[in-house]
Length: 147
Image (spheres, rainbow, N blue to C red):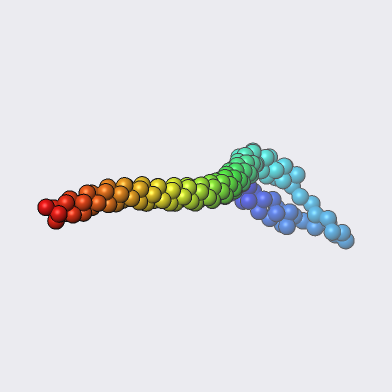
């Protein structure tokens, strides 16, 4: 850091300067002080540019960090919305499944009932046919006994 060295040199020059009797003033070598100030000015732009670059880079990093934080926050909010929507869809799907299951049970009961009725009618007709056949058999036996 050249500027710090030059500032120390300026400070030394002022401290080593002759004092004016009966005052707080000093006699300094004007050319020597102006020469040090000129050197400071020549070195100062690089230092200022570096400081400005550091400030600009710091600001860029802060903005980038803020942008990343906003992105993370937005992603979290989107995910939350998705999960809420997904939960609603799940609830609707579960409700629909319950409705379908109830309809299937009702339809199964109707089919079961219809099957029992069909079997009962079929068995009734079979019974009627068997009863008619039994009557024929009984008649035939009676006829055979008469012979």
